[in-house]
Image 1 (cartoon, rainbow, N blue to C red):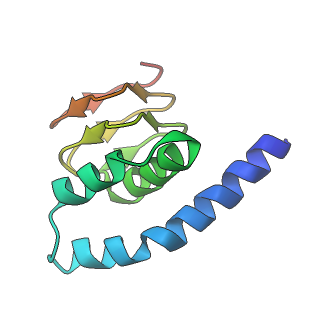
Image 2 (image 1 turned 90 degrees about the vertical axis):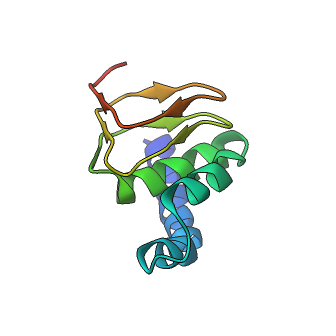
Image 3 (image 1 turned 135 degrees about the horizontal axis):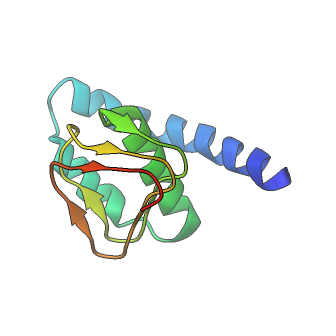
Amino acid sequence: MIKDILSAIMTAVCFILLIPLFILYFIGLFGYMSIAQLLSLGPGFVGIILRRTWYTCTLVNCGRKLTVDFLGAIRTAKTSIGDNVYIGVNSFIGLADIGSDT
């Protein structure tokens, strides 16, 4: 329960930190891949939460508990991701439809 509360707080903080990137992306000053690569450089738990928050807000479908590890990125917002998906270190996903629990 405490872990869920801390995760929710971290997600809210990360969302606030990402607002400038959302604005730059949605007005077209930065491409999707540029921001995804920038966020892939964030290490550890904070990097994972930053990436999860970005992808939750920008992908066609993003399930719960997505984990995109260090140097991992999703190349297009047209990708669909299910629940409990792990994308490993230095992995790049293109246009894909990834089911749950993979």
